[in-house]
Length: 395
Image 1: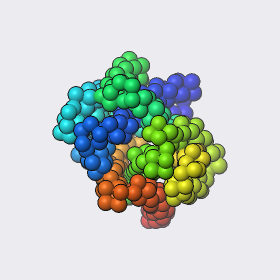
Image 2: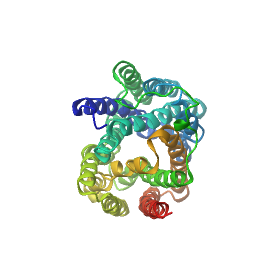
Image 3: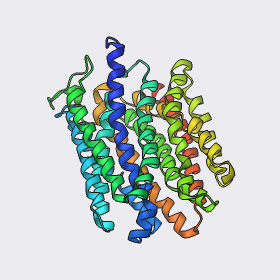
Image 4: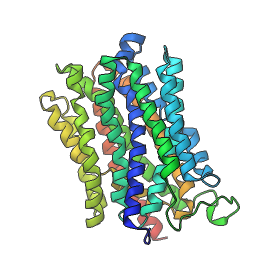
C-alpha cells in the first residue's frame, strides 16, 4: 500500500515466504521418496503420479468456499489453520502402509495447501497492490521452489539414512512451526481491513463476466506453468537415472529449484522496471521448452537444469501478477477462489497423465516432453489473456 512503511511490507513478505516454504517441503516429500514407495509398497508410477496429483485435488472443491471464507475469518486465522492441516497430512502419510492411508494424508495436506495458497497470494496482493507487485509475487512464489529444493536434498537423505516416513514427519514439523509464526506475527496491511459483514455490496459473491474470463485465463497460465514444473520435478530425475546417473546424482536437477529462488525475484524486478511483462514471460517460456526438449542429452543435465531454473522459471512472479490485472480489489478473496479452482483442475490432471505416459512407454523422457508442451501452452494462454483484456477494454 502507498502509505505502508517499506520496512514493514518487506518484513511481512519475509514471514509469508518462510511459512509458504513448508508447502513445497510437504509436497516434495512424495516425489523424493517415490522410489522407496515403489520398492517397499509395490506402487506403479501411475499410482505415484496419482498421489502427487492428490495433493492438488482438494482445490477442485475447496477453492471457492475458501475464497468465500475470507468474508468471515481473518487471513491470519485461515492460513495458520491451513498450515496445521498440512502438518496433519504429513503425519497421516508417515503412518501409512498402503495406498489408501497415504492418499488420505496427501488429501489432508492438500486441503491446507489450497487454503494457504489462496490467502498467501491475497496477502501479498493486499500489501503490494500498485507497488512492485510482480517483484513481491516473484519473491512469494520463490518460496515454493525453496521448499522443493530443500526436499529434493533433505528428503532423499532422510529416506536413505532413516526411512521414507521421516521425510513426511520433518515437513509436518516445519508446517506446524509456520502455523505458530503466522498466528503470532502476521497483521493486516493499512486500509485493507477484515470485512466480516457478508451483506456488504462491495464484497458480493461473484465476478463480472470480464473479470471471470480474465481470471480463468490467468489461472490457465499459472496452472499450465506449474503443472510443467511439477512433471519436470517428478520425472526428470528418472531421465538422468536412465542415462547412467545414480539416484543421489540425479537429484542434481534440484539446482533448478535453488536458482529459482533468485531468478523469480529478478524476473519480477525486470518486468516491473521495464514494463515488458509479456516479453519476459515469452522469453522464459522458450528457454523452459528448449531445456526440457534437450533433457535427453544427459551429459548436459546440470547445465540444462541450470538454464531451466535460471531463465525458464523466472517468469513466475510475472504470471502471478496477472491476478492483480484480472480482478478488482474488493472481489479479490472470491476471485482468488475462482482462480485457484481452475488452477487445481490443471494441476491435479497433469501428474497422472505424466505417470501414465511413463507406464505405457517405459521411457521417462515422455513425461518430460509432456512438461515442455505444458510450458508452451502456458505462453499461448498468456497471449489469450492479453487479447481478452484488450477486447474488454474496448467494449
